[in-house]
Amino acid sequence: MKKLGNTLYITTPEAYLSLEGETVVVQKEEGKALKLPLHNLEAIVCFNYPGVSPALMGACARRGIGLTFFRPSGRFLARVSGPVSGNLLLRKRQHQATAEPKTAVAIAASCLLGKVYNSRVVIERALRDHGLVVNRERLQNASAFLKASLPAIRDAADLETLRGLEGAAAKQYFRVFDELILHQKEAFRFTGRNRRPPRDRMNALLSFLYTLLTYEVASALEGVGLDPQIGFLHADRPGRPSLALDLVEELRPALADRLALSLVNRRQVNAKGFTLKESGGVLMDDKTRKTVLGAWQARKQEQITHPFLKERIPLGLLPHVQALLLARHLRGDLDAYPPFFWS
Image (tube, rainbow, N blue to C red; front, side):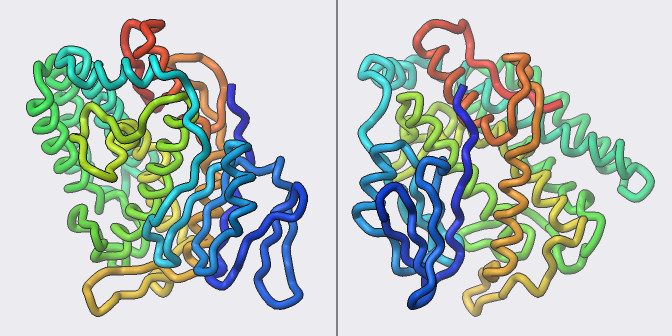
């Protein structure tokens, strides 16, 4: 089992990273530097302008340390990776599977079953924990709709049907998402999912977390030898990590949605941490981004019992576990891909 290591987040825009022996050097100001051992790191995520030295890029690639670049605004730029891992036969089988309607539909349906089931868990937990202060009727209706969608997803015969069911389920889920916001409701009012750019604070928070999750899943897929670009549920597009997006669907209710709600409801973030741009988009400031990243790291350390493996693992290992299970299915070791069902 892969070990969940530390992730170094560089949130100071002016910082520059370099390599000194086996140490990462973070130069923030003239004469002031932070030094960290390279062997303790699983990933480095940069929100800085100057960037990273070529020597450090090479060291990260050789050691399998994820190195990802974002704009200070949170928009993804690029990811550095080393030689492709895994064997040619696995990737060849992945490409073949996408052209087999029965196989592609089965894998896509599994991802979607996980998404709808886990979205329902988010709603059911709100009903259980905050039943006296939420609109029970609206939430119960949405939960019932999601539950009724599961057999239809399981029995779907083609990808278009699955995508239609996914759209209907997502619409119902996000229609009641605002009911799950218990505090700071006006500041974080949610009227529907929007992005590119997000036009309200809650969508800005969700988009940021979804971006972090997507590129962790993409790294996990590459780590087991799969191609993050070749998906099943999401159509292939140049530059789009379609397979990563497939697996993100089942993971984001547990890893991202629940965290976003907790950050707002616990007042760990507030309206002052977001800026409305003239273009209509909303951006997080540096202080809020650091708060979110700290909460993201803490969330990844939380322990769960994986429903398929029956082992205790940190939540942060879920992308790696699901990527491994998918690879085992494509190799023929598992009859079907087992999605993650949150409990």
